[in-house]
Image (cartoon, rainbow, N blue to C red; front, top):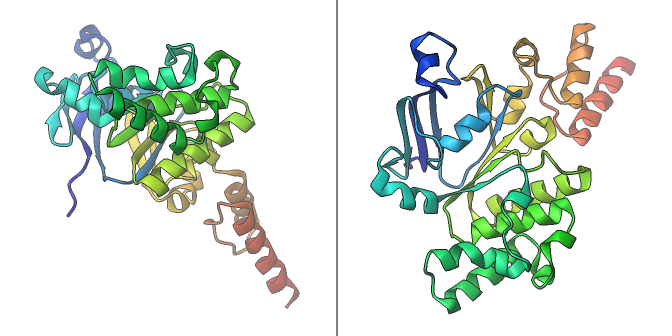
Length: 287
């Protein structure tokens, strides 16, 4: 069995010791997860579910109040391993403006490798490769502030890629983007995973983004409440509603038809799959 690139064991976290001592709810309350190398995992949940706090544990930005987090077998609580851990797991946040530090795109992408002491020729290779991977090569000499939100986020992703991480964790990277920017970033994420084999953990509250992943982890009140392939997770409409989450519109439509007594499957996530379900239903009704 392949070893997990990231593993959490009974991960618990409170922002203050006082909260923990006084019995206040933990922000993370016993999270057990294994992230396989090369996988694309989406973590879905409402604001306050603990998903962003979990993300910050995956490369040592936050340390557990209890339990353990391991990155490629390294304990995030081991200070001597922190640099190696952050090289292994790169982070992309909501606001790309907070991650862009240079006045030229290619200089921004080169910033982190330069600080790591990477030789100039290798930096050049990494910058060119990273920009190509996110589809931004033609903007190498552009000023970041003139780019769209989606383009800025892709530059921020390239800056992380240039550090050569084995895993990239994205904490709601589309939260501040318009629909076009959101689509650009999600297509980039999928390409990194499918074409380059990069492990991706995507934190999101958008159902359509979560549906793109190979595995979906649903969080509520600091706990994992559902975990599995998106088609299986989204089919559990009642359990999603119990934690104030709605299934994608396509699944919700089929669920409503089921409530009306019609026999239809709940695993048609895409518009095309849902349309096929409706087509098959009409054919049966007419037969």
